[in-house]
Image 1 (cartoon, rainbow, N blue to C red):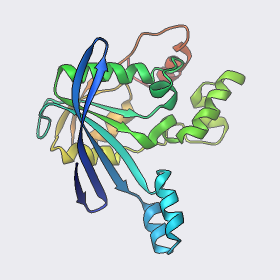
Image 2: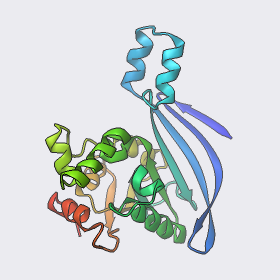
Image 3: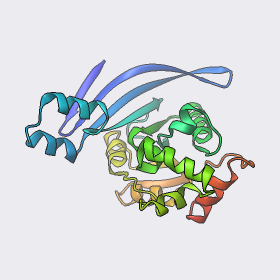
Image 4: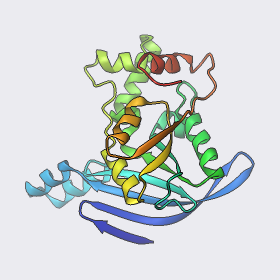
Length: 227
């Protein structure tokens, strides 16, 4: 496995992945992008113990980690299909269907498998960036108080969507992409990438609305997500 270092960025891979999509096996190349963040610099400058430093790093505090599944010849392409997917332990791993995250992840992989493109998996953005513990709390609020996750965030004094896409832009530019087709319904994600001088054609990725996921989908629409 190769490792590349560029300033505060470390890239590892490729790792050959064979992924089952429905009844077929699809080959992808997987890369890991680690961005050293400001917390890492602060901790390092304070000369804390190596044990604490390693502990923080293992918990993902010191590095913003992104996993990139690559299909085909993407570098310098002007037509690649891209999915920027925020991690969701509940939807992606447990496969619950209260949210649409897991189904969107699978739908994006299937579409990218048919073409050339990237799925950028944002490991640190679970719960739109509040991470697993608070995301769990927000789902308890949905169950116990009948709040959607946006309302739960507001009532607990949290930003409804604190995600930042600057590292995603760095990954896209690493691949030499100045124009992409982006699988998303989120206008904030589109605008964030467009503001970095990358041309974006939006490709919708809605999943089927059901009696179980309808509350979360309707909450996204109220917040301005596109149809």
